[in-house]
Length: 392
Ligand code: ADE
Image (tube, rainbow, N blue to C red):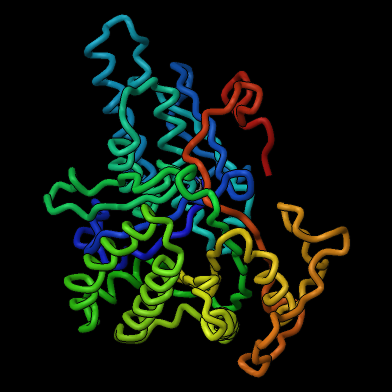
């Protein structure tokens, strides 16, 4: 499952991963971005093991992965205690094999997608009667944002107030079918430096930013209400305004951290200028906002828009950020030649410079998606003996 989130910056408890504010995300379509995970329990397995993208990863004792596996086994044990005839899977070790169909290092929320897939896979293996909200409590302890990816569509993570985190969970605001018209263009921006990890950045922001308090106490609670209503009413203008305002404020709070954190770079800022000008042209002609940018803890842009605007938006981005192999999108918007790049009438081309090939390394056109899917056995990543069918 892919996702893009409205950031939940700040943790009030870093072990349980409890946020300082509620947040909202759009789950993106797995047809384009996904984590596929297979898990298997067997009395022959000597320990819990994990293969990620074909390479075995250590499951650190007391780490987030170990916590998720332990918590899932606990839920399985409850099932076994109620139904003594059920096989004692909770006492067996598990082998887990996962694969992301996008580069794990590209900053596309791979751990959120991965932990949601992990929890869904174990829930299927264990035949758990748990709701996605209950599973979200466990996914949250793997990667905060993962909790929202247990649902498709438009999803809120309610921060909760209990110290044990039992009310810090995800709820679905609306399924994909409610507003399938929402598409997204992800601009994968080249990032040379290794940025601040989101966990350590978040902690420093909580400790040092004085702007954060106003944001989490006053601004975000109000915006959660406004954007949820906008989603229910399919009001793109409000959705876009709040999305962009919230992205901007999140990056303002990053800058207010001591020492300051810069997640966006010059390419990211150029994309803001382009979306802003694109919207200005529409509003000047009496129209509404046609696109919204948002940035997470890195330089990649996600541009949301109603489907009908995607062709213009792709052309706009390609005009300023030429693509090495042209751009062929998954929705057949462009013929075999791909997008050549152009701007809409009335667009002030001086708002950004034209960049060279590679400044935006890739474009992914996708849309709001559904939640976790259980695949057929033939798609499993583990062979009959419980080892990966392919390794890197
Ligand atoms: N972190 C990044 N990708 C992941 C995956 N597919 N599963 C678990 N953790 C991950």
